[in-house]
Image (cartoon, rainbow, N blue to C red; front, side):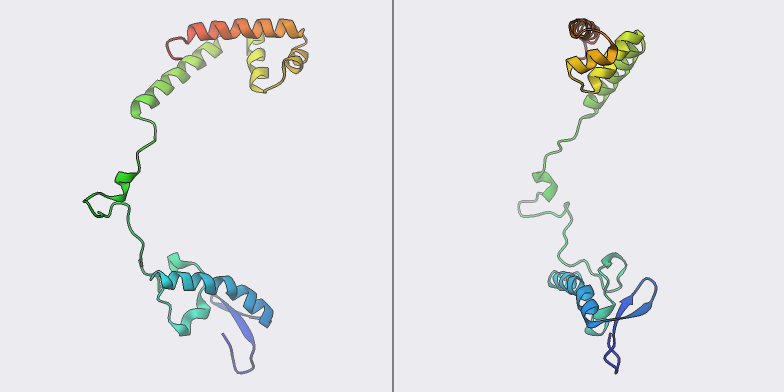
Length: 165
């Protein structure tokens, strides 16, 4: 907004303040806002009158000059009687997949609770994604002992969880 003394102001709608700024600050502040507002006007989503254009702060959700414009719902029927949603398959998990995952998780928790402390340590270093050498050093055993115990543990877990895997 301008007054007679050519002082530039930035209007903050949320606090209803006019802040005096330099012309460069004014231009920098309103450059993106004007581009955004013009784009919204081209799509019919903004009907802000010229007198109110400097009040724009790109918060269209609370703006009284907001309109629906060319937004379309995904449920709107298009040519052929189908909606936009018919073109996109539902790639989410099915209820059966969720139930199977839950059963596997419950079984895995039960098995992990029954592991000895040394077996839990092996699982912990495997989950930490350490190399075999670093994992063995962490557990204070040889690399060969670590790989033997890890393979033996994994074989046992695979056998117990064979119905789920």
